[in-house]
Length: 375
Image (cartoon, rainbow, N blue to C red; front, top):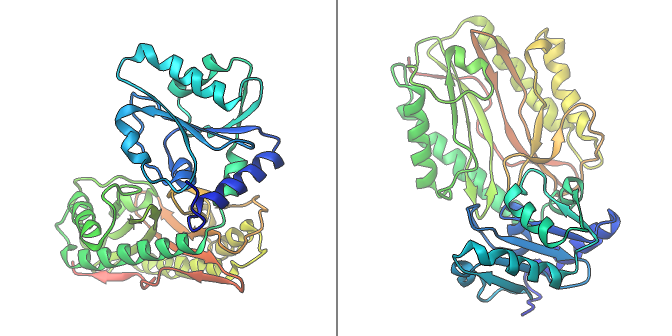
């Protein structure tokens, strides 16, 4: 059944245009954000394969376990379905039937290289030995990079949930508490504030020397007076992600830590202020990086300034040197410069930004200063 009020018909039409532009005949997807974006369906990766096929000429089709068919009721678009039972010996024939109906054998089929598993690929290749399966990351970036108003609204809510959760967590942070204890409390507060249960990523809580590791995992280390504390966290609302970072001090800290806190805040502001329509992604990186380099800490900022954000915590556009992609209205991404002094401590400040018709809007508004918490 077609429903003109749902976003899926326009998304399917946009996908068909992109496939034609990139000289692809079809797209094969297994469970993940792109499949959800195109269908509204959620499936877990498991031992039972789920494969959706989108072509330029036919309605989409999907092969899935019989136990998942209840998810297909009342879909607002036409979807041809093929189901199988629990006996794996029957699966190849059902997948072959799906492939035959799609007509992809002998044609060029795009796949997501970071999502397509060997499990599904082998079934597809066996059923369509003459098909060419090709890298479709660039095509899919075009599909999802510019967000619709409803997507931005969901991201705005995800930011609000994340910020409320952090504020509710702060009273429990003090010297003598472990990183793991803070991460656990923050996770509880994210759920209480309204985040979906399956977070996009586990919170990063790193204190003292651990804060010099951008992707540290929370440990049993106790916070100590004079520590820097980096908290990188996010929520999910209606399938869309927020991803924020703030840095705190546990009591007073040495002057250099205060200094790099100011520098990173200035770099964050420079990146956000540079962002706008038709500005190259690399220019945002250059603006933030220039502040840190000018201050003499360039060698201690060794990652890109940001990444796209949406149904995934990391997706295009990537805010890095060499990426000349023009930023366009509806693109959403992070601005997260940092300075990391090995063995001592680090500072990172991360905000979520959306490109608007006339500039850029920051969805997050928590203070960016180095906030002093009780020792």
